[in-house]
Length: 417
Image (tube, rainbow, N blue to C red; front, side, top):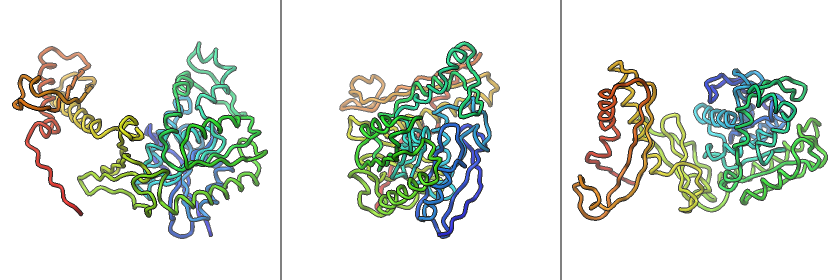
């Protein structure tokens, strides 16, 4: 099948323009995939191009892009870290979702493999994940900066040599990778997983594959790359990975179902979730028990229950989302009022909790029996506001539209469609 490649750009998580390529089959793609390149590499490294090309030949379109500050993308590498790479991946998925179709397959090479594992829960449409030479801990790359650790600690940053190129690395990068822990994400992955790793990989040891495999749940598979090097620089090795990956992905993309039992098991793939204008759409995520995908305009949100309640903890709970809506409405309302008055409000922050309490414990509630819902909202206002301004903004918080909806009479109509 003939393959074509399109150059395109999209906005990364930090607002920078990121350069990308979309490898497409000659006909209509049957699915889309997202590829994350190795640490300090680019979308144009041979392994990425060959794997994307092989998948496109099999009818799967692949978006590969340069992370912020690398390749042809805007931004400063020194200001990025593992967390920002994960956010860039989610932004890439959002671009595909809005302009083509959400990715059903996530592929990551080296640190990009760790990034797709961390990002997977935030791409609810993805049913399969594949990694190539991925570290089990993003902190694995810290050894690359060992000679510069003292300088980074003393000055906050240092120039380091990575693969013959000079990069400026800041302390925040080391702090970020040290704080990462992939194990919870692996345990809650609930997507088919394929690990490629070479036993002789001198950059990321084979023990990393063992740790990832042990932490993940089935279906999971491992493919040994024999004497391949970390970057798959030999053409034959890259072609082998591409062919195996394409054959493996076909099983899951064809079925359209994710890992494990639950909603969607054995069903045909659902079309992309799109909300009606001005509304919100919610749908169970394939292969999960409670996990949901939510569409609100061009935005996508995940929802789930924590593990204690039988969920995978892949997103906020419904009550978390309810509190988030009230909190966002509160700070927006306070901000609009302060701007209209010309008051020096620098930042508004609100923290909320929800609980069920006995009605008899609420002195100013009309209900006197049973239990009622109670939301505690703590508003923090920063800036040189006087006492009168602060008191007025506190009262304005109660006038936010979501607050009025929650405390007013609500009628909810439900019908089958």
